[in-house]
Image (cartoon, rainbow, N blue to C red; front, side):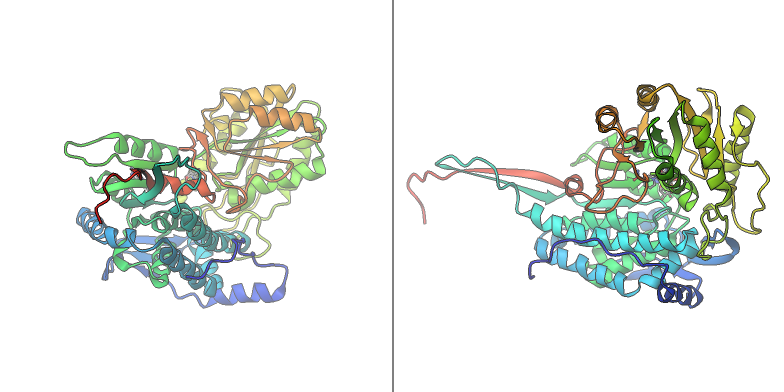
Length: 523
Ligand SMILES: NC(=O)c1ccc[n+]([C@@H]2O[C@H](COP(=O)([O-])OP(=O)(O)OC[C@H]3O[C@@H](n4cnc5c(N)ncnc54)[C@H](O)[C@@H]3O)[C@@H](O)[C@H]2O)c1
């Protein structure tokens, strides 16, 4: 394979251009629904309709009908992947990379259709739906290149005379990829492509809310040239994910999702049954409670739109979304007032409306959960946004965006990951107190700071435990190759998706040291 050109991010569409909008509205109008999603193991496809995924903005619209993987399917998928593993592992890294790059090209050719499917299945507004497709392409292109570099091993080992040392990275075996719904193409593609680029075989369990998008992840990889046996698709719910993770022949679990499930999978991975020949490794990327610190010298013209975007974009359903604002007491009232004004102006509506700021939530249970927290915030503190005053569209799982302040320190609203459009604002004496509050949290995914003083920036950077800290900007929208992403503490195992180091989780290092001083050479 020719050397690949340097990585660059796939440019997102410029939605202000009428031609880009027409392309997307045509794509959603011509989307053929429902998508049929099979259990897909090697060349075997079994269709079914046990899992029904619906449009969160119009729950009567069925977006995908999926078969539900049985325990037998889990066994068959892992056995098939296990058999395919040696051949894929010994395929030259450059050829594996070429397959990923062809998968990226396949996605690129159907960008509008895929954005339309993301929009229908998960109610991501157009800009976010398009960005999801672009990120899936980015992961393929980025890991393809990074895996070829990794395959060369460590070039910096010392080589004293008479000794040759080599460190190379070998794939681990079958990787179970268990994905969430909120980046329905990008996240499963990121985990699967990292595993495949480094020579592992993959069994993908997409989120039950987004099996249609999961199908396209598997289809892109297979069309690109990953052998059918090395990438299986198992639509199903949590029980399918649990059975897959437990399977003794699964070497690596790549999981992104909630903290509760991630911790359960960590326990699964720690259980070494008698006769096991490998320790399970787990990459677990989980939730957070992301805080933005606003110091007294912050420019509110900059901070307010960035906070609103971070807290309410995709209705607060990004893992990086802002959940708490810790603002200097001198600015507290002004910031609350300005946030309330900005939030009142947000348009709550269907994802396909280009003017929508806050789309519906993913499902009824999410709507109920968010409403419960909003009611608790109203009871325990003060709502800056009119509670219940906003007319919400009919039909979908809509929630009003809410800003609350004056909550007691022990409020659940300040502690739990709500995963919806609820933002809490707290007054702090100074940046140190804000840092103390951030430090008191057991989770550490993303965080933000607005300050015009470089010394304050340095101080907060030094004290911040989060995996991704954003200074004077929105705290969502990490880009592959620019902001390697992932949380610390209980937010994750600290891997950085979209960065080079991420691939190290899917390989095991092997060192060979050879005595090159020949005594009686046998030829
Ligand atoms: N840190 C990150 O990079 C990141 C990125 C996106 C989402 N998230 C987090 O994901 C969560 C939202 O996603 P979700 O609602 O899909 O999460 P979830 O944990 O409910 O589900 C994630 C996946 O795990 C599966 N699953 C559920 N129970 C399981 C079990 N017992 N064993 C094995 N698999 C099981 C689900 O079917 C799904 O495929 C939020 O907490 C969010 O913060 C984190």
